[in-house]
Image (cartoon, rainbow, N blue to C red; front, side, top):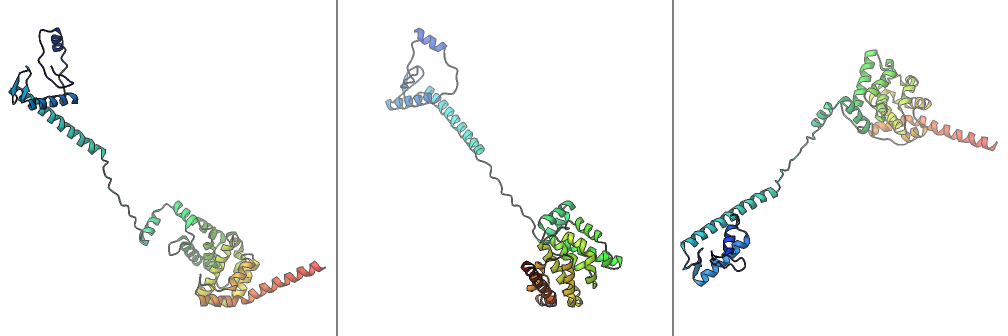
Length: 308
């Protein structure tokens, strides 16, 4: 009999009823639990210290018996099997617990000018138009909608025998088709393309369309910038007529008095080189003086009416 408390192994008396009951009620053979293994190890160590080993029959023999050696070998095998199984389970569990290291994926986008233009060409027409309206206000270079618009006006004008024969409705619809009918840069293009050397006589005829498209101070400044480039770079022979042209702009309500005065007060290199800008404004002095005088006369008339 094996004492779980102290580990002592003794021989049971088969004549006792308890012994026969225990033998009939033996537990199913299976793995020994930790407490059993611990008790057996403790018993073996105690027996070794006493110089004897206890066999299953309770007979001690020096240095152990062959039966005990077999039991020890079986126990060692079981223990070894348990240890090996435990090691395998732990190793596999550790592999499962360790998350697989994700490889970092590097995404690269070709940001060269050629690649950007190629991607823009591949966009649907509706999206291109939306991008022009929302974010391409300062877009420059060939192929942009403003460049397309200007080239279309010049080619259509040439086909019709002159830009003066180009219908305003056609021009407006083309701007709308490109999605730029409300943009300030569009009126800068118009100032450079819808007139020729007879601009003084043509302004009034174009005023209805221009008033529809010039909707803010920003538009007015852009229109004057386009005009400055038109007379300064494209038609320098028109520089002496700058005051007459500006008068037409003013009388047809295309540009406000305040914007005209601000424009005439200082040269700018935004649309042309500085010497050309100064030359254009020099020619505009007569008109600017007239504006100042007209304002002064209006003030005098108002004061006189107040006194009366």
